[in-house]
Image: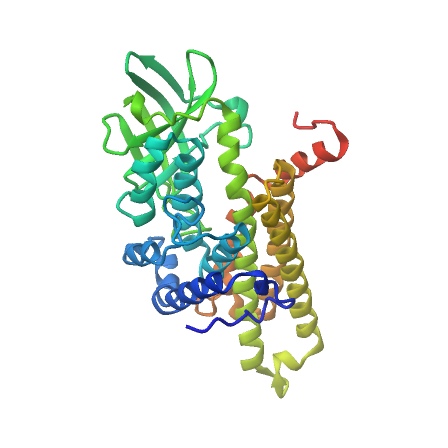
Length: 392
Protein backbone atom coordinates (compact mmCIF):
# COMPACT_ATOMS: atom_id res chain seq x y z
CA UNK A 1 0.00 0.00 0.00
CA UNK A 2 1.48 3.32 -1.11
CA UNK A 3 2.31 5.85 1.59
CA UNK A 4 1.26 9.47 1.08
CA UNK A 5 2.51 12.33 3.23
CA UNK A 6 -0.36 14.08 4.99
CA UNK A 7 -1.25 17.47 3.54
CA UNK A 8 -1.14 18.80 7.11
CA UNK A 9 2.53 17.75 7.32
CA UNK A 10 3.42 20.97 5.53
CA UNK A 11 7.20 20.64 5.94
CA UNK A 12 7.32 16.92 5.16
CA UNK A 13 8.57 15.64 8.52
CA UNK A 14 7.28 12.18 7.61
CA UNK A 15 10.16 11.91 5.16
CA UNK A 16 12.40 11.30 8.18
CA UNK A 17 10.80 7.86 8.54
CA UNK A 18 12.21 4.69 7.02
CA UNK A 19 10.40 2.93 4.17
CA UNK A 20 9.37 0.15 6.56
CA UNK A 21 7.94 2.67 9.00
CA UNK A 22 6.04 4.41 6.19
CA UNK A 23 4.60 1.10 5.00
CA UNK A 24 3.38 0.38 8.52
CA UNK A 25 1.72 3.80 8.82
CA UNK A 26 0.06 3.33 5.42
CA UNK A 27 -1.49 0.08 6.60
CA UNK A 28 -2.55 1.58 9.94
CA UNK A 29 -4.08 4.59 8.19
CA UNK A 30 -6.04 2.36 5.81
CA UNK A 31 -7.42 0.29 8.69
CA UNK A 32 -8.42 3.37 10.67
CA UNK A 33 -10.17 4.91 7.67
CA UNK A 34 -12.07 1.75 6.73
CA UNK A 35 -12.95 0.20 10.09
CA UNK A 36 -12.67 2.87 12.79
CA UNK A 37 -13.61 6.25 11.36
CA UNK A 38 -17.11 5.15 10.20
CA UNK A 39 -18.20 4.14 13.74
CA UNK A 40 -16.63 6.68 16.07
CA UNK A 41 -19.32 9.36 16.00
CA UNK A 42 -22.13 6.97 16.94
CA UNK A 43 -20.11 5.45 19.78
CA UNK A 44 -18.97 8.89 20.97
CA UNK A 45 -22.60 9.98 21.25
CA UNK A 46 -23.49 6.81 23.17
CA UNK A 47 -20.42 7.14 25.43
CA UNK A 48 -19.52 3.53 24.65
CA UNK A 49 -16.31 1.98 23.38
CA UNK A 50 -16.47 0.02 20.09
CA UNK A 51 -15.08 -3.29 21.27
CA UNK A 52 -15.26 -4.66 17.74
CA UNK A 53 -12.20 -2.59 16.77
CA UNK A 54 -9.95 -3.92 19.55
CA UNK A 55 -8.90 -7.05 17.66
CA UNK A 56 -8.03 -5.01 14.57
CA UNK A 57 -6.03 -2.48 16.56
CA UNK A 58 -3.92 -5.24 18.09
CA UNK A 59 -3.60 -7.07 14.79
CA UNK A 60 -2.25 -3.88 13.20
CA UNK A 61 0.87 -4.20 15.39
CA UNK A 62 0.55 -0.69 16.83
CA UNK A 63 0.65 -2.02 20.41
CA UNK A 64 4.05 -3.13 21.69
CA UNK A 65 6.10 -1.13 19.18
CA UNK A 66 8.55 0.15 21.79
CA UNK A 67 9.95 -3.12 23.17
CA UNK A 68 12.02 -5.85 21.48
CA UNK A 69 9.78 -8.62 22.85
CA UNK A 70 6.79 -7.32 20.89
CA UNK A 71 7.97 -4.89 18.19
CA UNK A 72 7.27 -6.27 14.68
CA UNK A 73 10.44 -4.53 13.45
CA UNK A 74 13.10 -2.17 14.76
CA UNK A 75 11.66 1.33 14.83
CA UNK A 76 12.21 4.85 16.13
CA UNK A 77 10.46 6.98 18.73
CA UNK A 78 9.67 9.46 15.95
CA UNK A 79 7.80 6.71 14.12
CA UNK A 80 5.92 5.73 17.28
CA UNK A 81 4.92 9.37 17.64
CA UNK A 82 3.53 9.38 14.12
CA UNK A 83 1.54 6.26 14.94
CA UNK A 84 -0.02 8.12 17.89
CA UNK A 85 -0.78 11.05 15.58
CA UNK A 86 -2.47 8.78 13.02
CA UNK A 87 -4.69 7.28 15.70
CA UNK A 88 -5.68 10.65 17.17
CA UNK A 89 -6.41 12.30 13.80
CA UNK A 90 -9.21 9.75 13.46
CA UNK A 91 -10.33 9.76 17.09
CA UNK A 92 -8.77 10.77 20.41
CA UNK A 93 -10.60 8.07 22.37
CA UNK A 94 -9.16 5.35 20.14
CA UNK A 95 -5.74 6.93 20.55
CA UNK A 96 -6.26 6.94 24.31
CA UNK A 97 -7.22 3.25 24.35
CA UNK A 98 -3.94 2.46 22.59
CA UNK A 99 -2.05 4.89 24.83
CA UNK A 100 -3.31 3.15 27.97
CA UNK A 101 -2.72 -0.37 26.65
CA UNK A 102 0.56 0.39 24.92
CA UNK A 103 2.19 3.31 26.70
CA UNK A 104 1.00 2.70 30.24
CA UNK A 105 0.26 -1.01 30.72
CA UNK A 106 2.90 -2.32 28.30
CA UNK A 107 5.20 0.53 29.29
CA UNK A 108 4.93 -0.21 33.01
CA UNK A 109 5.86 -3.86 32.50
CA UNK A 110 8.49 -3.01 29.90
CA UNK A 111 10.21 -0.39 32.05
CA UNK A 112 9.64 -1.78 35.54
CA UNK A 113 9.16 -5.52 35.06
CA UNK A 114 11.77 -8.24 35.49
CA UNK A 115 12.95 -10.22 32.46
CA UNK A 116 10.53 -12.99 33.44
CA UNK A 117 7.60 -10.56 33.80
CA UNK A 118 8.39 -8.94 30.47
CA UNK A 119 8.51 -12.33 28.76
CA UNK A 120 5.18 -13.36 30.26
CA UNK A 121 3.11 -10.20 30.02
CA UNK A 122 4.35 -8.11 27.10
CA UNK A 123 3.29 -10.55 24.34
CA UNK A 124 -0.13 -11.01 25.96
CA UNK A 125 -0.70 -7.27 26.22
CA UNK A 126 0.54 -6.63 22.68
CA UNK A 127 -1.67 -9.30 21.13
CA UNK A 128 -4.77 -8.30 23.07
CA UNK A 129 -4.97 -11.63 24.88
CA UNK A 130 -4.79 -9.49 28.03
CA UNK A 131 -6.22 -5.97 28.22
CA UNK A 132 -4.60 -3.59 30.68
CA UNK A 133 -5.17 -0.40 32.62
CA UNK A 134 -2.93 1.87 34.70
CA UNK A 135 -3.99 2.87 38.19
CA UNK A 136 -2.04 5.88 39.47
CA UNK A 137 -4.44 8.83 39.83
CA UNK A 138 -6.61 8.87 42.96
CA UNK A 139 -9.71 10.79 44.06
CA UNK A 140 -7.55 13.10 46.21
CA UNK A 141 -4.27 12.78 44.34
CA UNK A 142 -3.53 13.76 40.75
CA UNK A 143 -0.73 16.21 40.09
CA UNK A 144 0.78 15.46 43.51
CA UNK A 145 0.97 11.69 42.98
CA UNK A 146 4.63 11.60 43.94
CA UNK A 147 3.80 12.75 47.48
CA UNK A 148 0.04 12.39 47.86
CA UNK A 149 -0.50 8.73 46.99
CA UNK A 150 -2.85 7.21 49.58
CA UNK A 151 -3.22 3.65 48.30
CA UNK A 152 -1.10 1.43 50.53
CA UNK A 153 0.56 -1.96 50.14
CA UNK A 154 1.35 -4.09 53.17
CA UNK A 155 3.70 -7.05 52.93
CA UNK A 156 2.25 -10.32 54.24
CA UNK A 157 4.75 -13.13 53.72
CA UNK A 158 4.86 -13.91 50.00
CA UNK A 159 1.88 -11.63 49.33
CA UNK A 160 0.98 -7.96 49.38
CA UNK A 161 -2.33 -6.57 50.59
CA UNK A 162 -3.56 -3.46 48.79
CA UNK A 163 -6.06 -0.94 50.13
CA UNK A 164 -7.12 2.34 48.61
CA UNK A 165 -8.89 3.86 45.62
CA UNK A 166 -8.12 5.13 42.14
CA UNK A 167 -9.96 7.51 39.79
CA UNK A 168 -10.01 8.35 36.07
CA UNK A 169 -8.52 4.97 35.14
CA UNK A 170 -8.95 4.48 31.39
CA UNK A 171 -10.02 1.07 30.00
CA UNK A 172 -10.58 -0.10 33.57
CA UNK A 173 -14.21 -1.17 33.11
CA UNK A 174 -13.09 -3.99 30.82
CA UNK A 175 -9.40 -4.56 31.56
CA UNK A 176 -8.10 -7.99 32.58
CA UNK A 177 -5.29 -6.49 34.67
CA UNK A 178 -4.60 -3.07 36.13
CA UNK A 179 -1.17 -1.80 37.08
CA UNK A 180 -1.77 -0.46 40.58
CA UNK A 181 0.70 1.95 42.15
CA UNK A 182 0.73 1.90 45.94
CA UNK A 183 2.92 3.15 48.76
CA UNK A 184 4.62 0.40 50.72
CA UNK A 185 4.07 0.48 54.48
CA UNK A 186 7.56 -1.00 54.91
CA UNK A 187 9.69 1.71 53.34
CA UNK A 188 7.21 4.41 52.25
CA UNK A 189 8.22 3.98 48.61
CA UNK A 190 5.83 3.68 45.66
CA UNK A 191 5.69 0.22 44.09
CA UNK A 192 3.80 -1.21 41.14
CA UNK A 193 1.61 -4.33 41.06
CA UNK A 194 0.03 -6.33 38.24
CA UNK A 195 -3.46 -6.83 39.64
CA UNK A 196 -5.89 -9.20 37.88
CA UNK A 197 -9.25 -7.45 37.91
CA UNK A 198 -10.94 -10.69 39.00
CA UNK A 199 -9.11 -10.52 42.35
CA UNK A 200 -11.51 -10.42 45.34
CA UNK A 201 -11.80 -6.91 46.76
CA UNK A 202 -11.11 -5.21 43.41
CA UNK A 203 -14.05 -3.16 42.08
CA UNK A 204 -14.20 -0.89 39.01
CA UNK A 205 -17.18 1.45 38.46
CA UNK A 206 -17.65 3.46 35.27
CA UNK A 207 -17.49 7.25 35.63
CA UNK A 208 -20.64 8.69 34.07
CA UNK A 209 -21.36 12.10 32.62
CA UNK A 210 -18.07 12.77 30.80
CA UNK A 211 -18.29 15.25 27.94
CA UNK A 212 -14.74 14.71 26.72
CA UNK A 213 -13.23 11.44 25.48
CA UNK A 214 -16.74 10.04 25.80
CA UNK A 215 -15.76 6.69 24.28
CA UNK A 216 -13.01 6.07 26.83
CA UNK A 217 -14.31 3.95 29.68
CA UNK A 218 -12.83 5.63 32.76
CA UNK A 219 -13.47 4.03 36.13
CA UNK A 220 -13.29 4.58 39.84
CA UNK A 221 -11.43 1.66 41.40
CA UNK A 222 -11.82 0.48 44.97
CA UNK A 223 -9.24 -1.85 46.54
CA UNK A 224 -10.34 -3.59 49.74
CA UNK A 225 -7.77 -6.05 51.09
CA UNK A 226 -6.74 -7.06 47.58
CA UNK A 227 -4.13 -9.82 47.87
CA UNK A 228 -1.40 -9.84 45.23
CA UNK A 229 1.51 -12.32 45.21
CA UNK A 230 5.10 -11.06 45.22
CA UNK A 231 5.45 -12.56 41.73
CA UNK A 232 3.06 -9.87 40.45
CA UNK A 233 4.95 -6.98 42.00
CA UNK A 234 6.88 -5.16 39.29
CA UNK A 235 10.38 -6.09 40.33
CA UNK A 236 12.08 -2.93 39.11
CA UNK A 237 9.50 -0.46 40.47
CA UNK A 238 11.03 0.58 43.78
CA UNK A 239 10.18 4.29 44.03
CA UNK A 240 8.17 6.99 42.27
CA UNK A 241 11.22 7.66 40.10
CA UNK A 242 10.51 4.37 38.39
CA UNK A 243 6.85 5.33 37.91
CA UNK A 244 8.02 8.64 36.45
CA UNK A 245 10.21 6.77 33.96
CA UNK A 246 7.06 5.23 32.48
CA UNK A 247 5.31 8.59 32.35
CA UNK A 248 8.31 10.20 30.68
CA UNK A 249 7.91 7.83 27.74
CA UNK A 250 4.15 8.33 27.42
CA UNK A 251 4.13 12.11 27.88
CA UNK A 252 5.87 12.68 24.56
CA UNK A 253 3.41 10.38 22.79
CA UNK A 254 0.51 12.31 24.32
CA UNK A 255 2.04 15.41 22.75
CA UNK A 256 2.01 13.60 19.40
CA UNK A 257 -1.62 12.59 20.00
CA UNK A 258 -2.48 16.24 20.68
CA UNK A 259 -1.05 17.11 17.28
CA UNK A 260 -3.22 14.34 15.82
CA UNK A 261 -6.34 15.87 17.36
CA UNK A 262 -5.42 19.24 15.86
CA UNK A 263 -4.78 17.58 12.48
CA UNK A 264 -8.15 15.79 12.57
CA UNK A 265 -10.01 19.03 13.26
CA UNK A 266 -7.94 20.92 10.67
CA UNK A 267 -8.57 18.35 7.95
CA UNK A 268 -12.31 18.46 8.65
CA UNK A 269 -12.27 22.27 8.54
CA UNK A 270 -10.36 22.36 5.24
CA UNK A 271 -12.80 19.87 3.72
CA UNK A 272 -15.81 21.84 4.92
CA UNK A 273 -14.40 25.17 3.78
CA UNK A 274 -14.09 23.86 0.22
CA UNK A 275 -17.63 22.47 0.15
CA UNK A 276 -19.61 25.18 1.95
CA UNK A 277 -20.65 28.13 -0.23
CA UNK A 278 -21.42 31.53 1.29
CA UNK A 279 -21.85 34.87 -0.48
CA UNK A 280 -21.54 33.11 -3.81
CA UNK A 281 -18.20 31.40 -3.26
CA UNK A 282 -16.68 28.63 -1.11
CA UNK A 283 -15.73 29.55 2.44
CA UNK A 284 -12.16 28.67 1.45
CA UNK A 285 -12.09 31.70 -0.84
CA UNK A 286 -12.73 34.13 2.03
CA UNK A 287 -9.75 35.88 3.60
CA UNK A 288 -10.80 35.40 7.23
CA UNK A 289 -11.24 31.65 6.70
CA UNK A 290 -7.81 31.37 5.10
CA UNK A 291 -6.35 33.26 8.05
CA UNK A 292 -7.77 30.71 10.50
CA UNK A 293 -6.57 27.79 8.38
CA UNK A 294 -3.06 29.21 8.11
CA UNK A 295 -2.84 29.85 11.85
CA UNK A 296 -4.02 26.29 12.46
CA UNK A 297 -1.45 24.85 10.07
CA UNK A 298 1.25 26.94 11.73
CA UNK A 299 0.36 25.47 15.12
CA UNK A 300 0.40 21.95 13.71
CA UNK A 301 3.72 22.43 11.93
CA UNK A 302 5.44 23.94 14.98
CA UNK A 303 4.13 21.14 17.19
CA UNK A 304 5.29 18.42 14.80
CA UNK A 305 8.75 19.98 14.82
CA UNK A 306 8.88 20.05 18.61
CA UNK A 307 7.58 16.48 18.94
CA UNK A 308 9.99 15.20 16.31
CA UNK A 309 12.96 16.65 18.13
CA UNK A 310 11.94 15.37 21.57
CA UNK A 311 11.44 11.88 20.09
CA UNK A 312 14.86 12.02 18.43
CA UNK A 313 16.30 12.87 21.84
CA UNK A 314 14.55 9.82 23.30
CA UNK A 315 16.13 7.59 20.67
CA UNK A 316 19.55 9.01 21.56
CA UNK A 317 19.06 8.65 25.30
CA UNK A 318 19.14 12.44 25.74
CA UNK A 319 15.51 13.14 26.70
CA UNK A 320 14.88 14.43 30.22
CA UNK A 321 11.65 15.18 32.07
CA UNK A 322 11.71 18.83 31.09
CA UNK A 323 11.98 17.96 27.39
CA UNK A 324 8.86 15.77 27.32
CA UNK A 325 7.10 18.25 29.63
CA UNK A 326 7.67 21.15 27.24
CA UNK A 327 6.44 19.08 24.30
CA UNK A 328 3.26 18.10 26.11
CA UNK A 329 2.55 21.61 27.44
CA UNK A 330 3.18 23.31 24.09
CA UNK A 331 1.45 20.81 21.81
CA UNK A 332 -1.71 20.61 23.91
CA UNK A 333 -1.97 24.40 24.19
CA UNK A 334 -1.60 24.77 20.42
CA UNK A 335 -4.11 21.95 19.93
CA UNK A 336 -6.64 23.81 22.06
CA UNK A 337 -6.25 26.95 19.95
CA UNK A 338 -6.46 25.01 16.72
CA UNK A 339 -9.62 23.04 17.42
CA UNK A 340 -11.33 26.28 18.48
CA UNK A 341 -10.38 27.98 15.22
CA UNK A 342 -11.56 24.96 13.24
CA UNK A 343 -14.89 24.95 15.07
CA UNK A 344 -15.20 28.65 14.29
CA UNK A 345 -14.75 27.96 10.57
CA UNK A 346 -17.79 25.68 10.57
CA UNK A 347 -20.05 28.26 12.25
CA UNK A 348 -23.28 26.70 13.50
CA UNK A 349 -22.44 23.37 11.90
CA UNK A 350 -19.36 23.29 14.10
CA UNK A 351 -21.42 22.08 17.05
CA UNK A 352 -22.99 19.15 15.14
CA UNK A 353 -21.16 15.84 15.40
CA UNK A 354 -21.87 15.00 11.74
CA UNK A 355 -18.94 17.25 10.79
CA UNK A 356 -16.50 15.71 13.31
CA UNK A 357 -14.97 18.98 14.53
CA UNK A 358 -17.01 19.21 17.75
CA UNK A 359 -15.76 15.75 18.76
CA UNK A 360 -12.16 16.89 18.39
CA UNK A 361 -13.03 20.17 20.13
CA UNK A 362 -14.48 18.41 23.19
CA UNK A 363 -11.85 15.65 23.33
CA UNK A 364 -9.04 18.21 23.28
CA UNK A 365 -9.97 19.27 26.80
CA UNK A 366 -9.07 15.86 28.23
CA UNK A 367 -5.72 15.68 26.44
CA UNK A 368 -4.97 19.19 27.69
CA UNK A 369 -5.19 17.91 31.28
CA UNK A 370 -4.18 14.26 31.44
CA UNK A 371 -0.59 12.95 31.56
CA UNK A 372 0.36 16.13 33.41
CA UNK A 373 -1.57 19.40 33.22
CA UNK A 374 -0.11 22.35 31.34
CA UNK A 375 0.60 24.01 34.68
CA UNK A 376 2.53 21.06 36.11
CA UNK A 377 4.53 20.55 32.94
CA UNK A 378 5.26 24.27 32.89
CA UNK A 379 6.66 24.05 36.42
CA UNK A 380 8.88 21.11 35.43
CA UNK A 381 10.34 23.19 32.61
CA UNK A 382 10.49 26.28 34.82
CA UNK A 383 12.54 24.39 37.40
CA UNK A 384 14.99 23.44 34.64
CA UNK A 385 15.26 27.05 33.47
CA UNK A 386 15.72 28.67 36.87
CA UNK A 387 17.04 25.93 39.12
CA UNK A 388 14.16 26.77 41.49
CA UNK A 389 11.25 24.44 42.24
CA UNK A 390 7.93 26.34 42.41
CA UNK A 391 5.59 23.39 42.96
CA UNK A 392 4.33 24.57 46.37
